[in-house]
Length: 139
Image (cartoon, rainbow, N blue to C red; front, top):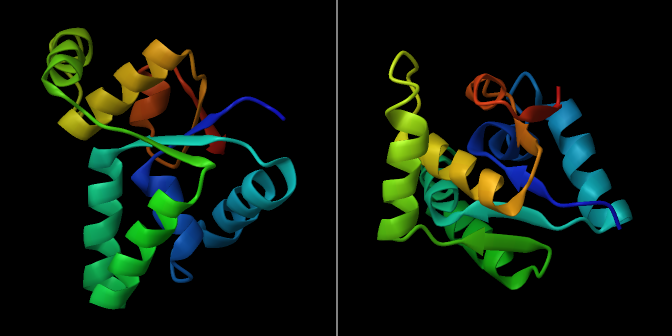
């Protein structure tokens, strides 16, 4: 089994949303990692919350709840819960030094989780991950 990948909203939602311009590439990657490689996919509860609201608003409340059920039932999806210490470290390490960027708190927490876990790859189309020094997949 290859190493874990961090799941960001931009890549994950593209994999699910058939109308997204990056859908096919994202869906192919996501399917490959889950079905064939059985890779661990790491994310945060902040990303899960973003995904839930996007799905509930665009596809309906039932789709949002089904998404939550699926994520928390699948052992390949690991959800890291942001606590006060993680958020403070994210602010100090990522928001203050990158004040010229428009990183969100969710971005900063994601970067900090990736740093702590020594994850190099993020499943995203969000270029903020590249600015922070991480590799983005599918591209």
